[in-house]
Image 1 (cartoon, rainbow, N blue to C red):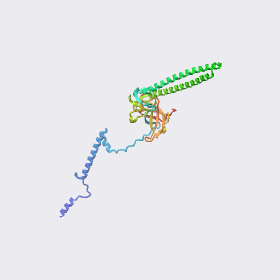
Image 2: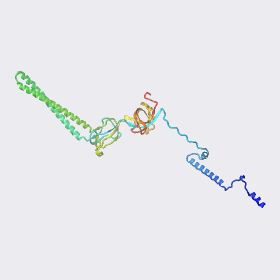
Image 3: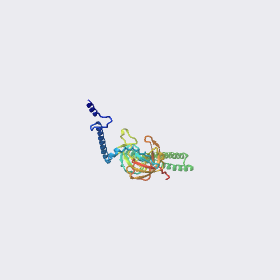
Image 4: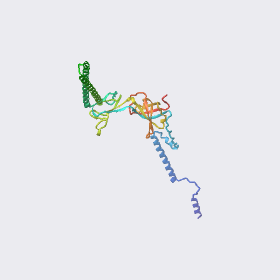
Length: 342
């Protein structure tokens, strides 16, 4: 019995004895899984860096070095010397030429892009009725002139007769009754001449009115410029106002005075206090980014755009440039330190 007890004591394992873990234990299996995950993570990171153009071996260094916190970029603060803004080229003189009377368009003598002079005929309306009325008025003027000349001749003859009668009456060879009759005839002829002259003036005034109306059938350019739009064609009915159903044209063509081009820029209202008349401006068209355009501040329009938070600034172009066209987008640099006196 004592032998059995001794053998059992030999088989007991002490609590303080440190025994290595068996190869198949759960602890070793967990460590192996963790190591496998780390290898897979390093491989995926290396592939991602390789796709972005970085060396693959940087993945190991990235895995061991902690990532630094991103540094926020400083907010863009406009320089105290210049202000940047954008805007468009606009024409101060722009007119859509329309007819002053209603009529059929017989001929239009301009095309888009054509330069016109002030007073040049742009289009012609059918003026058949106006021509006939003007011819009738001119005939009335001629008739009134003839009547006035006849009345003047009769008056001259009547005055000669009255002078002779007056001489004869003084010598006793003519009665006073005949003298009074001759004098009355002169007064009558004077009245007839006055009426004829008044009729002549009325006929001339009527003819002048009809000539002015006739000129309305020749549509002319109000100023020198370039035709940018042609809105009507021969055969269409044109009128100062649009007709019912839109069957009449109210505009024939649009003319722009290229010498009146300027820039209208939108400046943030927070910096509008630094903009003054006369400041130097460097403008660059979006269409021609390598073409510098000298300019200066012409005026600050005293109103703000509540939706954009901007104030409109008018900028004058200092030299003509054929490449500058209306409605082109432009970027401007306003030199806030320069003034009109610099």
